[in-house]
Length: 436
Ligand code: EPU
Image 1 (cartoon, helix red, strand yellow):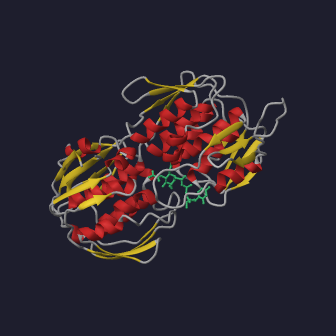
Image 2 (cartoon, protein in one colour):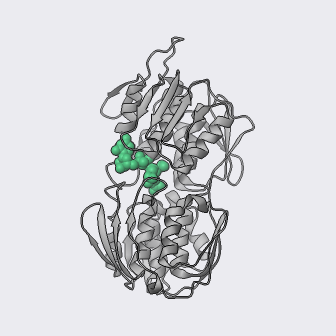
């Protein structure tokens, strides 16, 4: 038995209406939980979304002997002990890619870390060579015992194990590697320079907050980040406000374009969503863009009036890979042929098979490229979402489709989106959670 979503589609009609509020960003808050290991006392996190991944991250931290306390509806305090357990809980780490982010602060703090190869969604190979090479460049020694990687920092100036700051070049501008190394640099000896660093806005939020707590990080949001190493940080009285989730906001904007008369998306950061908003506007979606809100307004034309666009996923500020699947649902309804080139992950077009079964005309050329011909009516089907983002894309497709759909693997959607069925019901979607 597992949970699934049962959805009655709108057969292409635009009937949804109302307001939807965007929650804190998964891919900022997971990293914020990780940076709590850089603190000597405690750190408070607010606007934390209630999603499976934050629960798993809390369990991971508890396994490392930190204390995670929920202090309010969306707020948490993480307290660290003088000495932490350096071995990651095996099962949870295997299931959560973000577990890798803990290696940076843990290694920097304790001089040692033991962790299994991190898991997460099956969207590609997801190697960790950039992390390992960088730790080695910072003086660490890496061994593998079949189950765990064991990484040990070199002996530093005062006989304690300490990473050594150095200049790193990231072979690929990995988001989590940038953030992990930035955190490692905060407690390293000397200066760490991270070249070809990721530009994602969440990294800037993390750096800004750490700087208010005593870190010295320069250049976050540019391709070169410089971190001057120092002592453990103090978080007393400081609160990390999790920024809004731009992927959630983007997905709701796509849903609104396809199925809403009038949808007001509140508490978001449109200035971080240029690639998607540019594409939707160009396609003819009536979008009003406010400073912290988006509105799909007067959306009365049929979806076939929208024009198709090509997508090439790229690192920020390019088109986010995490919005590729929902955007493809849009393209099945717009008029014209489009090429989707997924450049970040090689397993992120698998879900198109489900859309094809619903009636979409999608030809997959290889693991990175597909062409879509629209518009095609979609019909309700049984769907099995292969990852978080594809799961939500299937929900959007089911809302657009005619008839009933079951989106299995609700667990994946729950990993990234809080109480999705309640929020969608509030704007008029016929969706319920069932045991299947
Ligand atoms: N890569 C390597 N070696 C490494 C690290 C990455 O080759 O050591 C490659 C990856 O295989 C991929 C590319 O670099 O081809 C970029 O991957 P990146 O490391 O940037 O991805 P990530 O840090 O593992 C984060 C998000 C993902 C999001 C990507 C891209 C978190 C916890 N995860 O992953 O989010 O898709 O950045 O923006 O922040 C999701 O939320 O559903 C999700 C998968």
